[in-house]
Amino acid sequence: MNELNRAPMKKLEIVVEGEYQEFVVDLLNRAGVTGYTVLHNVSGKGAHGHHEAHLLFNEDSVLIMIITAVPEKLVDPILEGLTPFFNKHMGVVFVSDIEVTRLGKFQA
Image 1 (cartoon, rainbow, N blue to C red):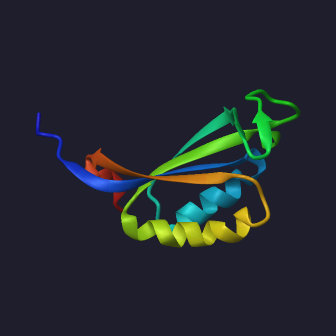
Image 2: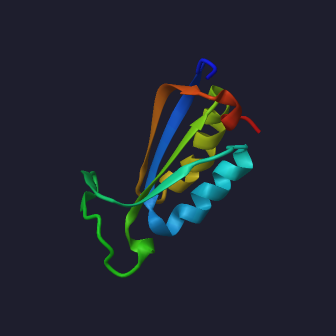
Image 3: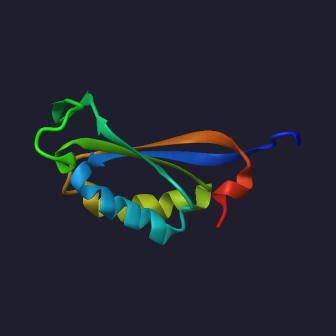
């Protein structure tokens, strides 16, 4: 097996209400993101109080987290696209320095 080389990237963890998943995914696709993971029914506590990880009415009414790894050059455009959204809606974006293996999987 070939050695797994590491490359620097940024990890974005975007937490929003489920009804806004399509908006965030569309923004990521338009920014050139090659992949992401969506976690449904996320629970936690924040400025808007405690959120349970169970369905109340449908999947739109729960929190989701969208996780992606991107090159640093995509972070600012993605955050700029999310800024108007977060000026009106609850949610948060965590940005972390990470390393990935198999860099080709993250390039278009």
